[in-house]
Length: 177
Image (cartoon, rainbow, N blue to C red; front, side, top):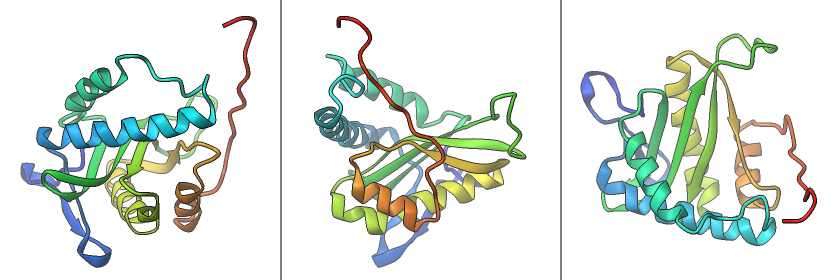
């Protein structure tokens, strides 16, 4: 499911300005992990408790990403050439909680980043569109994308793609740390 097309061939879709999405390989994982680590560092400055990184976050996330390259319950796509990832998106297909019935699976996107903030306008919609196309073919009827409140370029890309805010998480300390 991880973004590959039938017959085990990797997915590749060309988008704006020749950018393309494709299924990642294990060789892409270090680039993806580094990009995610940069995003975590930025997010942590805006909400230090909620987004606080573990000391070994990069090592753990790299191992986790290697497991997702061929995971059957995830859609994992990258944009860019082999050896030079410019953006990535990872969605997990799950049923809705039992008290809701959206009509099919939900594709939850928690890891979604681009190398430079100005790339959200081009790479964000390309990655999200291809993920949604694959997820729809696998039975998903909605996509839920997590983003930080401060991440305005990403929020604008999501808004431009037709997504709306459905929920907010509020956070605060309980007692002493």
